[in-house]
Length: 384
Image (cartoon, rainbow, N blue to C red; front, side, top):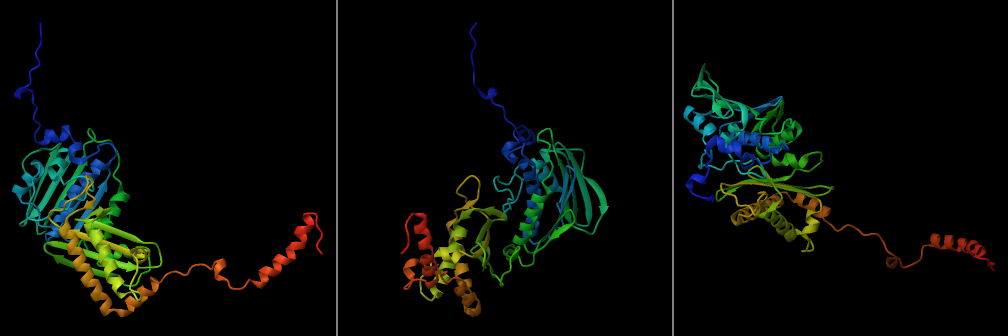
């Protein structure tokens, strides 16, 4: 009997909600075996806490690692009860009223619902409007209704979860890597203090603190400004050591892009106009330069899947305009800093060559003459 292979609507399987995330976790958090996927879950929850800071509310974030359980707590506004249910159960729930910080360098923000679906246990506590509420989930399913825990004067949100190790390979949290990332975030966001396992990172200098790491520097040039909806933060300094230039977009590191190219072009333009010979290469300017630029915008466009090459042309224009204007003003107001920089940028003296010597060295000539008789004797000749 012949069989028929029919393909119709009944042949299509549609995965929705929690089941879609648990069946295809790699689409949401990436690799589930090398540890990067479970760390991506942390970046999502931490990104929500940083969003509260960027909105003008949270000033402190605490991270605690206890075995496989990790807890992230902020002192922001807290979640309303309606928002709690939506944020942790509905995929792609969020707001489009402000840019969301994507702390993962290779995955777009996924929200808290996939984190909940990929956790064996998750508990969220919210303090808002004078009350404390909490809810617990297992494998993404609520264990019951939201629990009321009484009155409270504090505000904020705490999320505590354990990754589901039936989905992820059982690897520990990378505490040193998490702490290093928190240090960078604290420098990028000088108004925010981030504590991890009792170690608090808070840098009032902001980006300048990244330049000072282990280095002795004169006061770096610093500019913070907004231009047509783009927030720009940059710091530049020079020292006697090798160069180091870094860039960030919405708190995530980038390898290149229009923001970094504009920073370098603006720096070269300002210094070239003040160099006493009128010409100086970008290579010489950057030979001892330390610089970092961070831009924040609502809709970044990247030129590659890894999202580390910014392409928004309006960002390049804004960075060049702001940095060129403010760096020129800095040198006009601090001529001593300009003089020190121009001295550092002077061409390095090259070693003397044979063509540079107009007369032979007497000492070398005497040594050469004294060796000639011995050399002739070894060759079987007699010096006369």
